[in-house]
Image (cartoon, rainbow over all chains, first blue to last red):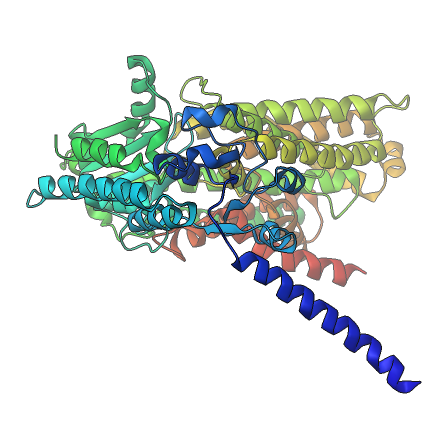
Length: 290
Length: 333
């Protein structure tokens, strides 16, 4: 009698272990995916750039580039992935962001393989391109795209080499019409790397974070030679541009302000760590070294 | 004569403390500056970094902190006396939730209108606080017997959670960058970088403080009991109305300037009462002065302890205020 009671939990345990082995074995057997769902917009752009676009069957609600994705079904995004729709679309590869642990658990449970992505520095874009090429059966084109990106990075580096590097503040957000809640790129991440490649010295190099909120006192004290401000608008008319630039005049002693080197870079693509970074670096380099 | 002397000495003491803090705070920060250079008129303004750090980065912050701290503390005193509830804060009656909703809408809709150097977010948050005040007032005044403090309290608390739900909804449908900005606004911040927002909030706060001053004696009678106060000739309904409207107006202006900075409106009045007793002729001005000094000191901590990063000041006040609030609860029960 006693041994029978003991056997039950052991039986359950064996069941779980064998089920787990079955699941992980299935995940390990990966072929070239035909139905990819990408929940990370910049990875979607990479997939299309390396020729895996036709395999993509659904994207996140934030995806707008390249234009082909706008007709694809959407399945939620970073914090609200629609697991049911994802499963219903029968994907054989899902691109997830590193923090989507719950979704990853659910995908594992239904034996859908996933590609785990997290933002990193500029190098990480190249690594991701090559890894996705290998994973989706586009090794050659991924290599070609990665080399082209590397070549344009190297070209900018060579062009600015030896030139004086202006001390630069890279702002990507603040309260409209004022200098409150200024968010800037700090000493890590692809925006920081783009700035360094483009020949600028990041004045927030010592802050080991991707972004930092920075006070007016810090800007006055660190005296950037150039302030680059990213603006998601595609274009601004003169009045709007003046309205964007006006608040900076408060910080009159900052060299960037005094020498009229507060530069607004426009376009939504600038903050996307994908194939479009080459264009972003080029714009930054032109702003820093006209 | 003795009570008058006591009022003068106690308030004088608090005033000295507040002035000392306000004078000292702009001289310290994440960057060392030279005061002699900052005040040296012979150096051109454009070249004088020390002067710019002092007058552009620090002084507006200290003034904003003083104004917001004084307002929230005084509004707390008035509302606690009027509602006869020691746990009331300037945010209990829905004003800050309305202000936050206004700010959230301005952030997520990317409103970019401005009047005289006042930008869309403070404008929208002040508008939101007025809407919330009007709603709560209308609900409480719809009772036949004047303004019911019970309805006021219930309507305020309910409106708080209702607006919070709307705030969450607006944040949820906003883009990442907007949602982050909205969340940051809720943490409070005093780096106003200009004197315009302070000047814009000032008239409303001055009017409210004049009303507070007029109300102090009545608040003393009211805190004994509404019936006792009525028996001594206090027009309870009119006083409730004035107290609620002036405290709400002041809170709305303060929140639009510095964001919903929590706990000032409850810790400061209670600390001051522990120190000086419960006479509102002393508690009210002393709380305003101590609130100013307290928030300026919290902001000083916010801008220096993690330098070059800065902490939202609302986190500092909450970290100090939360435990204090709990201590107060335990001590009372």
